[in-house]
Length: 80
Image (cartoon, rainbow, N blue to C red; front, side, top):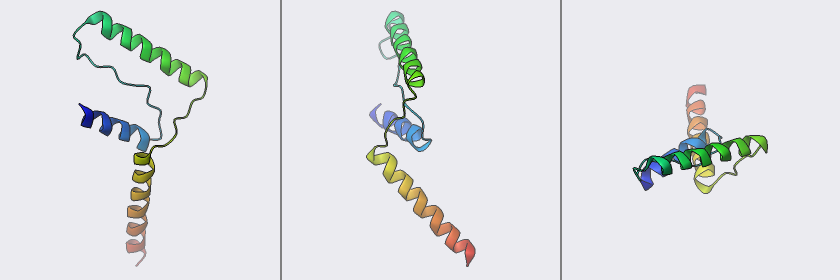
């Protein structure tokens, strides 16, 4: 589950979006899942209301630089 979480977090960061959190059904308790969804929805509304922008992490900055370099190399090859 940790690897999936990291992949999803990276995808959100690459898209320059905000991650409000995760809700899973691992507990199997409908009331707990509903409560988690309600909390997440409230948190997302609060983020939107406050114009919250999540700061970049090490992975986000590193990924952006890797993609930048890859695309720069491709452009240089195309110009030749």
